[in-house]
Image 1 (tube, rainbow, N blue to C red):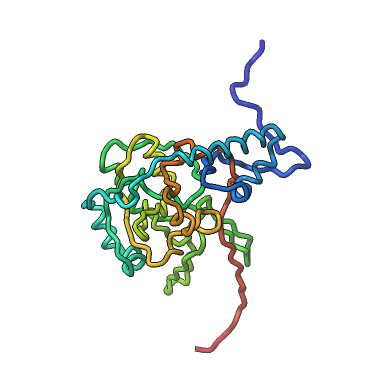
Image 2: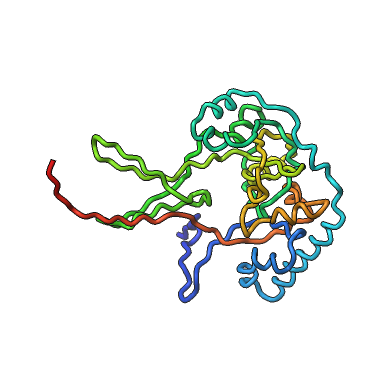
Length: 291
């Protein structure tokens, strides 16, 4: 009798090579020159044979040509209407939210997602289910749960303690202490993970929530709830060296839009999957004092 194993055979790392994990992304290659594209996907290009590299670079050049024919978009006509909902009142009563945004003008609004300027150069489509009701749409775009998912490893007795996450928002940790028991708690600092839009010089830039906005646009939803704030300096709009610079987006009449991830200005590629984290070393020394 012959039995068929329904499970695929287990995979094992090949000997003598570096193991890499890749994720599929959409890249706004149409707005990226060859040098900057190399910085974005150069590592993936090296894994392709000569034919594969030529095909991907040709697709990038075709995206640049397509960008030249993109229609103009009224970039200052983004805010649709104010948003009033219980979740807004919850945010306004949250001390973390107040301390983060009290120094700048802000408001909750429905915005035109197809007119938001992109400062992120890649997006990883998640294909999450798109909500049908306004209640679920608000929960997706404006969640009031800001804990950063993470895992921890510890080498006793003095560490190091390593806290890692797939979220790039894990940059620091908060330390809380219970004085009566001497218990110390380490945890990732919460990240206000809302769909955030920043207005600067008459244009509206998506600062956070790219994967959610991409999925909503892909499903045909163009009006979405968001936190809209005003940038007080051009540097506040940028996302670092891997993103589009504010000087670039302001210097062209038709800047990259989040909606362009869905069109001919974007190509499919891969980037390395990364982990982010912090390491904490402990210095434990006994002492004795008189009280």
